[in-house]
Image 1 (cartoon, rainbow, N blue to C red):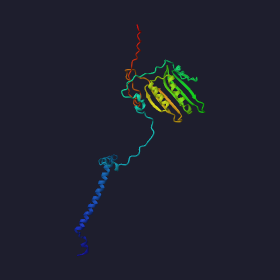
Image 2 (image 1 turned 120 degrees about the vertical axis):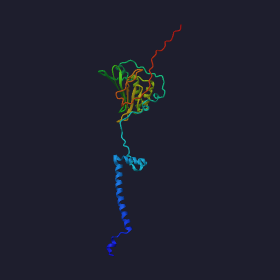
Image 3 (image 1 turned 90 degrees about the vertical axis):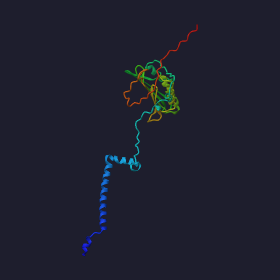
Image 4 (image 1 turned 45 degrees about the vertical axis):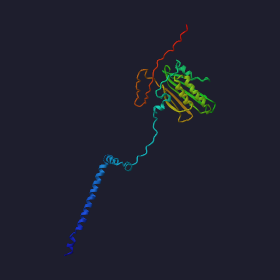
Length: 282
């Protein structure tokens, strides 16, 4: 038998090897097609199916990239919660007490401005422009090259409605610090801003300790802060809060009610009664 005839004849072992090779090639192409199909299914819609599959097997820690560190930035000042705005005595649960308000004298704006005159005779300056008026007062303390000082600016409208009361103290002479703060406290009393004894005690405590604060106290919004450019100078700003409703009336919402915080507090209106006259003995 010629050698060429022997070479064309395949044994069963040769046929099995050829079949395995065909199966391997088919399996390889099938795996490539299935992998491409799975990749397409998992990556569509920004990888929604992939994320769902990872969460299903709880593998987020291993297969998800680490979250970036949060970016820290200084945002604008936001209002503090009510517990930080109001003094503690005003937030006591079930608060029921007799409130004693200071009665102010019926004085005109210029007469009230003149009350800021100190013991040394330093007089304030009162100016009027239409319905608006302004009261300015300046006083220095001590004989230092840069003496401590107190500046008061009061603005209002006719007849004697105060819209803002500002005191600026310069504690450039530490030996005069107590005198300046004491005079600032007396100035609020001399001008006659109507306050309850609790509110005035709260204000005196903060000023005496040079404690910065921003509070809503009864019918005032008060802020006492240090100047950014000079740590020796402080500003006290008292803004009266206008009464918008009487006893038994519902207050109207402010125009910016969607952005302004509103703190609801029950307020009772008491009718004033005259003291009974003592009966004369017969």
